[in-house]
Image (tube, rainbow, N blue to C red; front, side, top):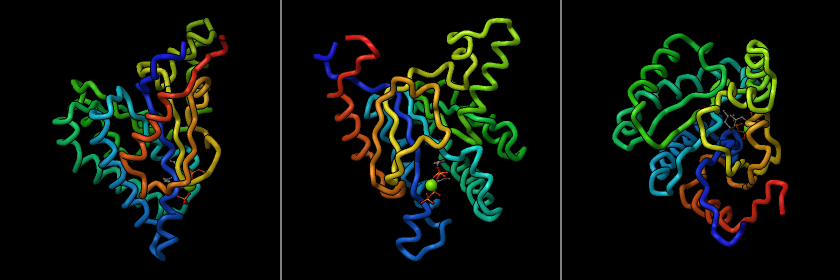
Length: 227
Ligand code: IPE
Ligand code: IPE
Ligand code: MG
């Protein structure tokens, strides 16, 4: 192992720092989220040229409900707007939308919109997975309960019931904004993922920064416990 550069197939990003981006400019937090969506849009366009099979974005955690009603409503409205405006582009860019997390319990109109978007993009070959109302501990508990229901709780049966079961193994996990924690994101899937923590605030994140992260990843030696 080790001589061939590694090509990352699945990258996940904890998109953090929208609030601080806005605060630095004396703007409302909502503006930070709005600019955050712009960063997402540019990044999604770069998935194909970067040769990624799957990009997973942490958009709303199961703990984010603790924020003000105003902020939560604003985030949900941004989600509605984003799906509506970008769905045609997903379809023409060969993107397949997937949602992970407890998204079925979001507002019924959002659930309907997402189901429609998933259906309309089902032929796409590059996966964009958005984590919505996502908490990794809850995901693992749900998967373990399903494994128990079939009478076999093993590493394999739990993995097979995670929301990510049909996704490639996670290669690289990136968090922006300088925080060095996982905040309940992809705990199981990160067992052997490479990690990268960058100071960039999410609205300032660019495809060039992702490309630099992929280049850095390519040079890392992944051992998976062996030698
Ligand atoms: C990330 O930015 C976006 C979401 C969690 C939805 P934050 O809103 O957490 O920004 P900071 O951490 O307050 O700067
Ligand atoms: C994690 O960011 C969730 C998302 C990026 C969607 P948070 O800003 O919610 O995490 P903490 O509160 O700093 O751990
Ligand atoms: Mg944050």
